[in-house]
Image (tube, rainbow, N blue to C red; front, side, top):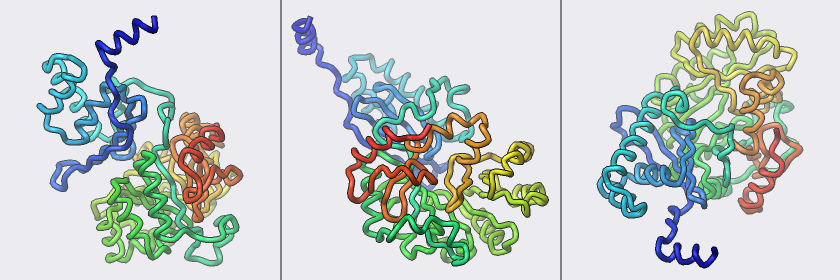
Length: 395
């Protein structure tokens, strides 16, 4: 049998998969709809196509090759000729399959909230079951410092002895990109306290990464500062809304006027609850579409279902998987405690879908998992960190 296989391999040599790695495409500035595609090819030729850092499509090796040529912007006839030759398939068949996959991807781009399973006939996998060599995202706590020194007890400042320098953070981004991670969320503490924030965003942008920022938003009221962030390549921002802070509302209004995806995070407190619906109405009137929720105490978790219903009534999209700085009861923790329909997704995200990097470079499965240090992005290899994540992921 072995001799027969050897003979067949000589006559019909197995098709070698494309080089493993991450490939990136960004739509030109004049495109009708701005979008980014990241294609991560695994060693076995399987692929992950990530649309706008949010929709993840698992591809078999053949579909991965089609997607590769789309991302690389290979001229269509050249791509068809290459695939037909590699697989010994008629060009007409390749052309039809190529057009079909491209149409599906374009539909995902043009309709961000579309379910690719229900409408586009993609197969559904268990959450994060296709995560092999790296997560989809890193959450980078650039600092644990806060603007209000009196609030210092909220941040786990005693966990770190120092903050990484700008050069060290760029090394972190380089390692993450080389590992195939397309998305970095910059958080804290308050990340706008870092004077090198725009430089860090610009470096990630140069690599091809999607970058997000989680901030109290106060500095975004400074028009010049907001524009600097946008020019550096920032892709999305989450504003931690303090409803009693006029400057926060001003920053939100200014940010919504720009060409950037905006999410508002609202922390439920006894003080906020009586005005919750009024706050939602004001947000809707301003044009907010995405909202994240957490609570300052799990005693309020019973309020979350009613609050989610209120979001649904106003057609607001609930964001559940983003960290919230220095909050013990961030959205993931609250969702887990509540046992929502997204519980399985939430519980399998930390250590698989995303990792959390502290200001000194230590890697945790996710925000709040302070007892599980997987390694350090500067001193440990990616292989070691990912192996530890695979063995110690929660859920």
